[in-house]
Amino acid sequence: MQLGLGLYRHMLTQDNYRFARQAGATAIVAHLCDYFAEGPRIPTTRDDGWGVAGTGLASWQPENLAALKASIEAEGLALAAVENLDPMLWYDVLLDGPRKAEQLETVKAIIRRFGEVGIPVLGYNFSLAGVWGHVEGPYARGGATSVSFLGADGPQETQIPRGMVWNMIYDAGAGPGTIGTVTQAQLWARLKDFLDAVLPVAEASGVRVALHPDDPPLPTLRDTARLVYQPSIYQRVLDLHPSPANALEFCIGSLAEMTEGDIYDVVDTYTRQDDVAYIHFRNIRGKVPRYHEVFVDEGDVDMIRVIRILLQNRFEGVIIPDHTPQMTCDAPWHAGMAFALGYIRAAIQACS
Image 1 (cartoon, one colour):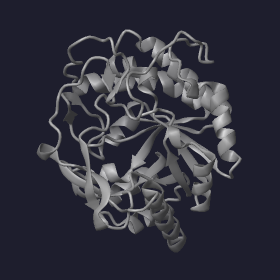
Image 2: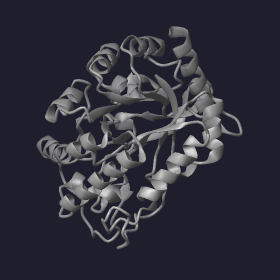
Image 3: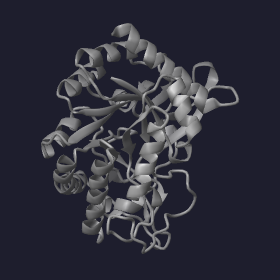
C-alpha cells in the first residue's frame, strides 16, 4: 500500500511535491481539470497531439503529460493516477449528444497516451450533476472549516442549464433552457457505451479506468439520475463490462455516507476482488441526506479498522487523504493534509 497526495491542477508545483515527500507520501494523484476556472471552457481547432482537434486543453497533450510525470518523479514520487476528465473532453459522452463518437475517440486517445507515458490509472466520475449542494462551515473538530450536505436545509435543487455538466460551463452559447430529466436507464446505457468503447483500449494500454461513487449519494440530483449511490451498485458497474481495466476509485467517505451496507464489509469485498485502483481516505459524520465531512480520526468510520482490512487483503494501490478540513493557521490546506498524511502513515506502520 502506497501513501499518496491528491493535487489540483494549480497545485502541481515543485513545492507541493516536496511537501508530499516530506510528509511521507510516495505518490501523487493529479487533477488536470481546472475546477476553479471562471467562465466556460474555450475550444479551439488546434490539434492536441492525438490527431483529434477541438479541445484546446494543453494539459492533456502527450508532451505535457510526460513533462508532468517527469517533474513528479524528479522529486522522488510516482504519478499514480490522473483524476477526472475535463468536461470539455467528453460532455456529449455524458449527455449522449451529437459529438459523442468523436469525444469517445478523444478519450481513447488519452488512454493510449497514458499507457505510452506510463500513467497507470484514469479516475472518472460518470455524472451530470457532479459534486453539488455542499456548504462550507465550522463542521470539524475545533471549528475547523469543512463541508456538509444538509439536504432540505441546503441549496435548492434546480435543473442543470444547457451548456453545463459537472457545474462547469462548456458552451456559453448553448441558449436558454435545461438539459431536462435524465433517467436511470438512460444514464446506465451511456455508461455501457463508454465502457464498451474505452475498456478494450485501456486493457491494451495497461491502464485502469476507475469510477468514483456519487457524492452526494442520492438516486437523483438536479433531476438527473445517479449511478453508484449504494455500495452494492459498484458490482453492477463491474459486471456491466468485466475487465481488469474496469476498476474503482474507492472513496471511503462517499461510501460511508450511503444508507445501505456495512462500510467494513464493503471495503473487504471490493479489495478482496482486486477491483480497487486507488482510495480516497476520509471520514464523515452522518449519512445522506445530512452529513458532515470531518477529520480522519473523529468520524463515524473506524479508519484503523479500514487500514487493517486493506493490509489483510494485500491492497497494493495508493491511498490519499481527501477533502481534509482546513486548520486555523497560515496554510490551512497544507496543515490539514499534513495531519491526515501523518495519521495514515502512522496507522499503516502500526497495523503492519
